[in-house]
Image: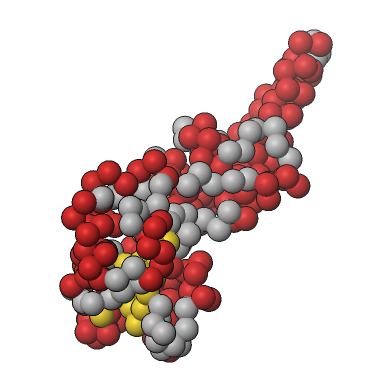
Length: 267
């Protein structure tokens, strides 16, 4: 029996299942799916879900199982086997990087899974030659992007170290000239403590993100920040998007790294 999975990238309104499937189960007929599209989508689903349902009806696909965020095609790829069909809205559902997209597609096709992309108006095999050329061209851009992000992180780390050394030098000069008042000792201790806390917070955020199965790009989209900003946050523990990132990860600043696995990603 052919199994059909529709991968959603947009959360359903109210977190409710689509009307019809709750009563008909995963074996709804094409006619039942068509009725769902006509009467229920505006209230319980999204435009993306409606488009996927309409595509399924047009192609005679029955018994569609909808997969909700944050679960991705990558996450369920291990459940797909020869003869199964996966429906996705566009190539973004395959991954944020061209290399990720290509690897996932080749893995699924090699396993005998059929992949349909709404944006390509049909099976991905029909566009595979053009996509392969695009992915190969994108590989060079990926390398440049990775090098740029790494360079930015290195520059920030070096700048931070230079500032610390400068502060130490200034403090040393002050001590030699005037001695070190208790207030300055306390200020220095606070600064050192804050630096350690920021670094540890960056590590907690990275650990929580990885254990939640999210990429830096996905976390950035949920928090309204760029991937580069998330990368800097994980390295330095500093970012204007800090509060939004912590909220997305449900990770208070005081949570130790050992508890990061308890983070729940909002659905």
